[in-house]
Length: 264
Image 1 (tube, helix red, strand yellow):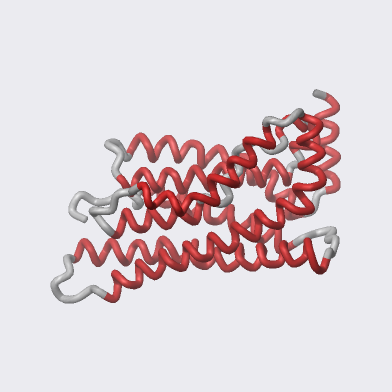
Image 2 (cartoon, helix red, strand yellow):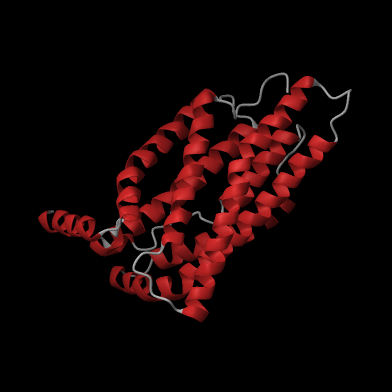
């Protein structure tokens, strides 16, 4: 226990300001989101379609950030058996957020077997983590230390950036399409709902540009430029944007604005 504390203090001593902020702000943010997921789930009973998808969005962001926090705090360096802990749902927020928007816009929306095509890559990605996590501790730690950072992580960042941007774009197109269809006969409750969804979704749509830029840069740097950064500020920005999105989700969960009104 003393060696773990000593190594953690040594990490904090050598950490950048960005890493300090991630480590210090990460733990209370993780606790806050765990509380909000349970509080939102309890408050939204009986569970309806949009409520369920909203919980999935919060959960996917929470677990993905937990993985980022573990890497930033170098948890795997002190507990190598946690390497490839299958909590990284980085490819899930885009498709899940897309289905949340559809379930809010269209009252008759139902998830059908053909919709599983949206989750092929997220399921394959999560399966890889389960497979790697089942390896012996030292073998998977060596895989995490070398191949993951050199090959898998750039592909992961690139895939997340592209998937998040595309699903945010298509979800925003759905919202704009419904906004363009508003006329004199449109119920006021429907206009309010579309207006709320547009405001709510802007943060994620704008953040998708940051994720896309970081994913493209991460891939290019891994296989073309090969620049070793002492401080990768774009990566820190990528994580901070993730934190903003989590705070935004929690903020709306606190106000219960994600709950569909009975007259909508």
